[in-house]
Length: 122
Image (cartoon, rainbow, N blue to C red; front, side):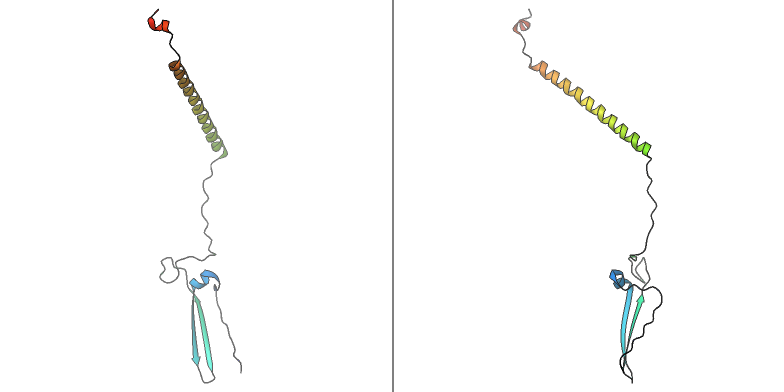
């Protein structure tokens, strides 16, 4: 008589992927009886254990964790911040232009030739 197979299952069993390798504990035993060999294969899925003592530390891939949403700023506050930044940039640009004009005037005054009549005091 040919070999026969019987399967018994209960609950949730992961068989594929990395989680299948980590979460399932498999054992195979062969028993020699008078009628012939009997093979028994048992697969047990281990529970998730955050400490890693009785089961794997890593959570299952299909576990969904819902986080609290971030606080969103109102559009009015974003617009006010943009306007303040633009005003500050315009003021900085105007201040830089004034400083460049002053530097140019100082360089022009230093480079201007002095007339000899002015040196003699006439």
